[in-house]
Image (cartoon, rainbow, N blue to C red; front, top):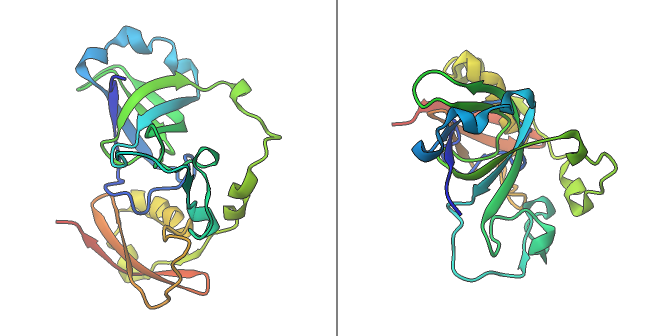
Length: 222
């Protein structure tokens, strides 16, 4: 397997990354490795609205594997077969994400490169392949198994004016959406605990009580 590209965005650590693609509408940049930075290689890609990304769980490499894992959507207390989950802890640490293709950029530094929306990859993640998404990839009647349990897990978000003023306007809505998805592990419900999330060069600290997430501080990362 050859790495053909890397993705660059505001997700600088694993904690807080959306659990699935398409949940937050922020933008990422996909830059091809020099060997694959060829205009002919993306010819026709602009005609598609979405693409598949096949990528490397680069921070989840390990020796050996376990046939069962604890899905966060089940609170981390119940084991399921690894092949029934999207856990990064699998025999081959390969991820698959569907994202909206916003632009195929043919000019400027690093061209051609791609701008995509809704990625669930951490900044710098290696990408193995890019493939067009087509309508036949969609199965509206698909069953979602135990994953259905996590759909209703959303929080109300309160960002006091003093903290909101420290967030760039173009990132505020994405941060609000990201926090509403409850980035905490499903098994953590300590109302006194202060959690920290890194996004776009900001360290955002918050606490959660009775379904309300309150941002307690916003600081620029050093």
